[in-house]
Length: 259
Ligand code: DGL
Image 1 (cartoon, rainbow, N blue to C red):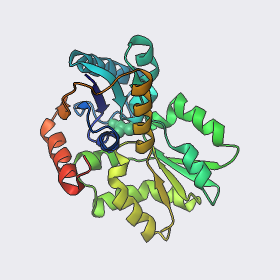
Image 2: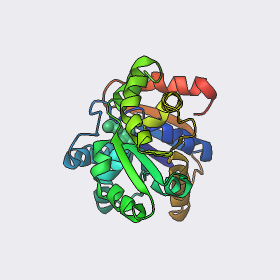
Image 3: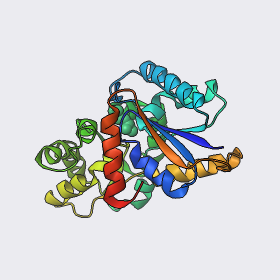
Image 4: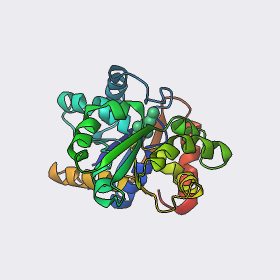
């Protein structure tokens, strides 16, 4: 039976989970929001590694055969040590620098992510591979995670917060913006509105979630993990307020049937 654990510091990982469920509707999922410790963005790698060990042990105690770190910051801080310490496979996030670099017409790409992700060696290595070909400009999405966690996805406060990070990237000529944190796709409507208001209707926002879901399918195939005899379904857990997680999940389900 294939139980798959999916984690994030909060509701952001649901932007990845909805893509996973689209591709693999018959598995049994445990989604864990570590919202008592959210945001992860400014925490030390050691702290995040400790959280990830506890969450992985929880998933394994519930029969998980694979774990998805649906969190760029957790991937940057912890995926390498988790892979050394556990036998089960881990799938993590990869900022979508490559598709952005291939698609840009201005030769400038923007990356929005947390401070932890932008400092991590995974991102710095990826950036190093493309820097000779395109200019890469970055901003921390300051306050973005808090907006999403509180359900303020649109409106004046969301627009002002988004504009503070997005405007400098657009001003430097970025026409492809990588969403390097799994919370940010939930702000897409506001990101598009702010870009249009600033005269950049052509700005394209790139979410790596579909690629991560495809990677999970590959990993399960490679490891011979299948959904046979599995009870399809989703269980939701949170280290803090689980009402917020359940409410957000329900609104996604009702909104468009995407989960
Ligand atoms: N959604 C997470 C990420 O992808 C975590 C954001 C945070 O907790 O700061 O980076």
